[in-house]
Length: 338
Ligand SMILES: Nc1ncnc2c1ncn2[C@@H]1O[C@H](COP(=O)(O)OP(=O)(O)OP(=O)(O)O)[C@@H](O)[C@H]1O
Image 1 (cartoon, rainbow, N blue to C red):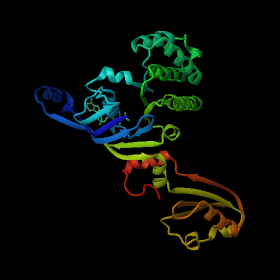
Image 2 (image 1 turned 135 degrees about the vertical axis):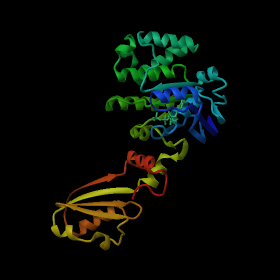
Image 3 (image 1 turned 90 degrees about the vertical axis):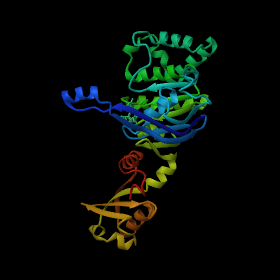
Image 4 (image 1 turned 180 degrees about the vertical axis):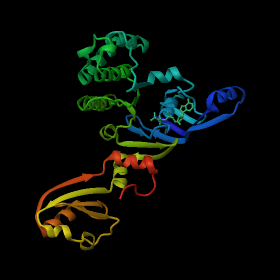
């Protein structure tokens, strides 16, 4: 279990002055600047959960993960990972965690991949029996045997990500931190990586903390999300609840045959305010943008069908990426959309 209670991290840096004179001045003045990167956050993540930890650039995600991995010490508050204080027991904590950074590899660049795995086996004191069975499993879910004898520098980005994931999991850690695990990958490889992550979570009950800007990763992998903004947790709950509350906007575009249908006042006829339904006409298309809590897709379609012929229609629901974009811009105030 991961447990954070009122955790704060502040960085103290020296004030920088612009230009050459500024640089000289900086040498003689000791003016400090305090940056509150993480501000009093609390969370509890149970074993086996897959949690999306998201936020805009500079929100405080990496700082939080660094405290969970023991790289940084909290300025105040309690951070415990599987009963261990990571900053005080870095080595013990390292045995329980795996980390994958999409942007950089943790493997030995010039060595064949098989050698990297052999080194990790020794570092983590993995028994030969466990090593063999895990390698077999990683080949099943990640297909690593295809390139096991190639040096890491020659691997494609997709192969390298699969190798990095296997390497992070070789010692069967209880917690896996994934930082942008699908960045730069094509859609097929992304799908494979996500499927492997799901399988590994199911097989080993690994707790997974995923930080990403890719909302498809979140939708595919996480039931729960935690959103951080300016160092503060602004949402911690089920993804489905966030979608239900904030994903109320829906768009239907209906192509009709009769021109009379284009001239109706739908707000009046459907008895619905302009706030909950806006209608735009474009050639023979009527575009309804509406709040799903006020009126349903079926209501609108059946109303139009009763009065004329529908040639075609398209429905577009609000995507998670749109909701999250609005939350990053405006915070969690009121209904974000519609
Ligand atoms: N070592 C440091 N010294 C001073 N300030 C820092 C340090 N590390 C991070 N910060 C600041 O703390 C804030 C949070 O940074 P952090 O790296 O945790 O954000 P993030 O959410 O991971 O962002 P991104 O998505 O861009 O990686 C930022 O304003 C950053 O500039």
